[in-house]
Image 1 (cartoon, rainbow, N blue to C red):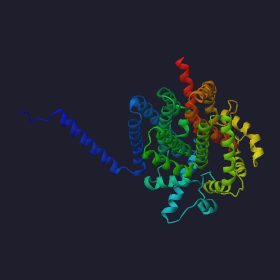
Image 2: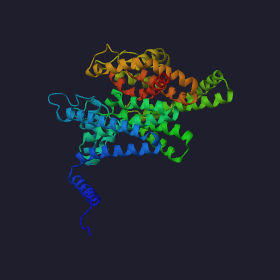
Image 3: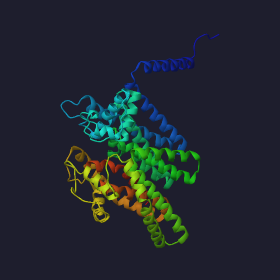
Length: 456
């Protein structure tokens, strides 16, 4: 009779002891250290779940690049956190990464500390009350994202690294949903190429490692688009829930982007429906243009009132053009400002300026603009983007001709985003960051163009 313990039993008991040890360590570890670890583990499990459910046939490839992309972002986040929060030395707060990320963190912590003392903080009283000013935040403004940071701190304690890791997770999720959207609209081959761009394009990694709003805005935009495209083929109540959640989040942190997506979706749906009935694109364009003008006239006051109410800035503009002009003047500052003094406070002035603004949105920062370290870092990426432009155009032309219904909405949204940025951006630094959301979608067509080249 063998009274010993088998290897299997030893291994199983080892797993149990390991689990107990992990739970013990988690129990004594402070929340500000434990939470970043939990965010990483949650991110990996969430990636496995989404890929297993919606793309199991390409699991090995997709999870590999997801895990690598996520880990790269985590390490980059640690680097920025160490040099911005622990080894600042004589440098200004947040010197190694854009001050917005520093401001969100510090103002979020301030809001949480006020809430602990029973003091209610709103956007209005935070800006107007000098007692609420956060020294070193360098913001002068407050957004819903600051309140999100305060909520995170209410769980984690003062843990900026948790915010960094949440941004890394959002950036990785955004890239994952770019794959899913591309697979629905084009093919798995094109989706793989677009996923490589989304996971490893340098500025996409950069902006998703520094506690900024853009990764979170991007991921909810892509979830919304994916749920619309996927539900078109596989109608299910769950996708309506995804859409509602995405809309509610974007209402709070990305109102202009949501307005563009909703208006473009309405425009494209109307266009495709009327075109199906009339069989003539010219007649369709005339009818849709007329209906859009009528809609704008009828809904103008209500829409503008809603946009101003959801705006991060407190202002009293009376027209959409004054609203855009205000935003542009606010951002046209510092060494990275461009085309300063441009007036777009009327429809005519905005239309005249739009082509020049679009030129900057698509091609800036130019290689000869070296006003900051960030722009020097952007030069190789910018040159690579210029090289890829012929493939992007090829992918757009092919998609327009062969997959018009699938690509028309995406192209309209890209154009809407570019046009909005062309009118409101006056600083190449913020432009470089904000346009990344549109570039995720642009690279889907770049991937299509590269795929066509490989097929030949």
